[in-house]
Image (cartoon, rainbow, N blue to C red):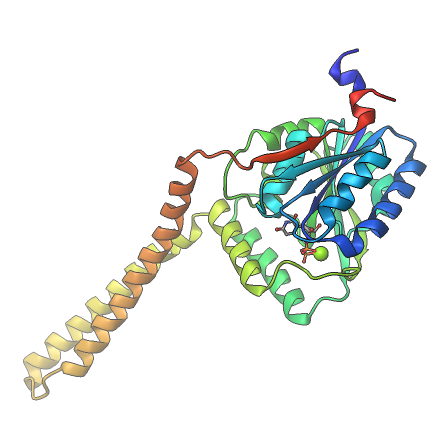
Length: 321
Ligand code: UDP
Ligand code: MG
C-alpha cells in the first residue's frame, strides 16, 4: 500500500507547552468528538519544550492510543514554529490546529469537517465571546486586529485565532513558506483559497497558565505588523518630511525675525529643542529600519525552523491496524 492510502483523513495538530493540568481532559473530549465523526484520524501532539510532565503523558498516550502521534521538538520554539512542525508532519487530507487548553472547543470539529467537505480550504473558528480574559487583553486584541487589517495587504479576519481546519493544498501552501518570523494568522490569510468562518464562544482556559503575557503579545503584534506591512517605514518617511517642512517654515520665520528685530537672545533653548526633536525623529526612523534589517538578518541565515528530538508516528497512519 502506498503512503497516501495509509494516511488518515484527518490530522489534529496540538502544540503543547507545559499543559499537564489539562491534557487528560483535553484528550478525552477530543477523542470523544473524533470518534463521533467517524473518520480515520491521528492526533499529532507537538511537544514544544515542556518542562512539566506533559511529554511523559503524551508518550504514554502514544503507547495506549494507536491514533496518537508525537513530535518532540529539541527545545521550546514557540507556538508559531510548533504549528509549522505540525504542518510538516501531519499526514491527513484535512488538518486541524487546536490549542490544548480547551479554549478551542473540540466539539466544533464536526462543523469544520462539514464545511471542508463542502469545498472550503480554510475553515476558521471565529470567536464571539472572550470569557476569562481581562478587558485590557480584549481591547488590545480588538485594536490590534483592526490595525493590522488597515496596514497589511491581506485580509486577516477579526477575532479569529489559530483554531481552524485546513485542506491538504492549504497545508502544502503553508509548508512552502519557510520564514523564521512566522505570523501564522497572517500566513493563513496570505495563502488565499476559499475560506469561511464558524462562530463560537471562546471559553476561559481550563487550567494552567497562559504563556502569553502582555510583553509577548506586544512582540507578537510587532511581528504581525513588520512581517506583513512596510507601513511603519513609510510612516517614518512621511513624518520625517513633515518635520523637515516645519523646520523650513520655522527657519523662514526666524530669519525674517532676525532681519527685522535683530537677535538679542542667544537662541540656545530653541536650538536645543530643534536638535533634540530631530534627533528623536531620526532615532525612531532608524529603529524602524532596524526592525526590518534585523528580520532580514534572521531570514538570510536560512536556518531550519526547528529540530526534532523524537517522532512517534501514529500506528494507524503507519498501517499497523
Ligand atoms: N504553546 C506552545 N508553545 C509556546 C506557548 C504556547 O506550543 O511557547 C501552546 C500551548 O500549549 C497551547 C497553545 O499554544 O496549546 C496556546 O497557548 P496559550 O493558551 O498560552 O495562548 P493563548 O490562549 O493565551 O493565546
Ligand atoms: Mg489559551
